[in-house]
Image 1 (cartoon, rainbow, N blue to C red):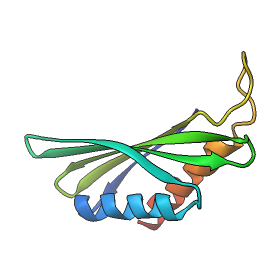
Image 2 (image 1 turned 90 degrees about the horizontal axis):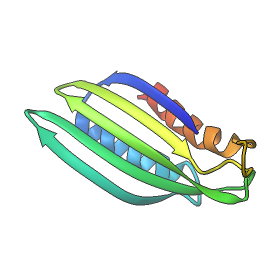
Image 3 (image 1 turned 90 degrees about the vertical axis):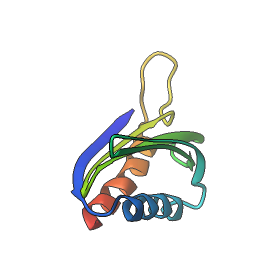
Image 4 (image 1 turned 45 degrees about the vertical axis):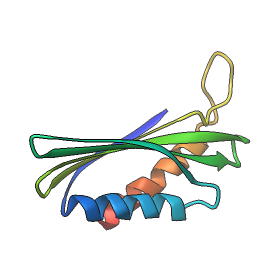
Length: 110
């Protein structure tokens, strides 16, 4: 499991579209699986789950993206899981890190 979090500034809807398209365009096998959305007292929260195939692990792995917006202040969190191998200990988590590296780069460019 790998995690990336950061705070950004900008338009919430534009950011959600940007990260969604960037994740799907970042890998030929990436897919959008499901989402949950809520707005409470002006704070917006979207939780989205993406999957992709990991060549290094030989399996599919997921990334959960959470985007919170309060006005122009945005909080982004990405957590990957499922790309490791091993029954007792996790090893070969390269696929998880690579999926998350795409999100890191998108956030850096935002």
